[in-house]
Amino acid sequence: MWLLLLDAYLVGGFFNHTLHCCIHDFTHWCGHPNMTVNKILAVMCNIPMGIPSAISFGRYHSDHHNFLNESKRDPDLPLPW
Image 1 (tube, one colour):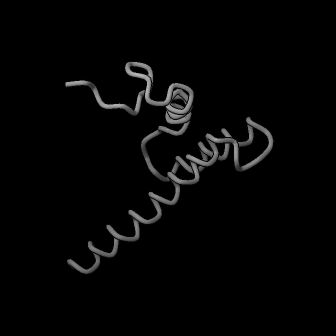
Image 2: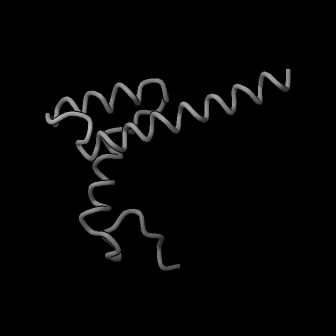
């Protein structure tokens, strides 16, 4: 039983990370020349993950690149405290 749980954890984690890498690339418009197709593909990759996050990730990830290392504007920076 523990081997099955470990296998599910490792294989599931691998596929979850792979799908998130695909979502990341689609938010950089690397999957297809058309932006709408990239958004559709990102949402399709997000379906098996269970928690809808592809479109919001794209929005905040874009802010991260546009405002890189700017305090209070880059959403990936930690708070000063």
